[in-house]
Image (tube, rainbow, N blue to C red; front, side, top):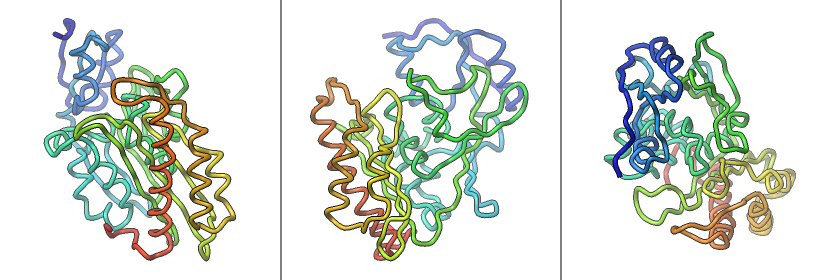
Length: 295
């Protein structure tokens, strides 16, 4: 199918992009285009104006600022996947990026675009939810910061004005004794997640001090399995505990059926992938697998 007619503009500054987005109802920002362009081809999205933000400088970076990991919204997944800083300090973000599409896709797709789409299949959102990330938004009145947990709302639309851009993602560096892991099931390479699970644990003598479980592909928005998280607190991270937490995680899911999988299959895969992610997160947290090393 051919996209509906639209206008096109190139922004060279964030301020110009914000002005263009606010000037035309139905305008959309174009970053990597991996979410938006396929929707336009199916006419599931019909923007009146595409504002290309690929030529805005200084929006692609990965840096540590006083213990806060700062990632520019235009950072490509290929850069996240290969980042030495991420591999040594926050491996799960690189791991998540590596799961998106193929090498060609990762060369153009951006972390900000993956989040801004507001889709329930957002892999990065599942990971950033359990890491407690903040998003820096830039709008007509300047910049402000929102927790990613409040960015997604139940109608599937992100809590963001049409004339705002995500410009940065901020993550507090994981402390010693913590670990995180990402697991994804897709029908084939390049597909959106049929189910994806991110898990983060901090341990004190193998007892869970904090826990996060993020789910994607099982609801209109990415979400956390809070009942399962609360169950883990204060318990040893052993097979029985992790198995029960994985079972409880299925209660948070509200999957639908489509050509890729039935609702029942997705629900069962939440349990399987949650168990795998929790085991790997616990291994990394306990030091049997260092936070910055791949198994």
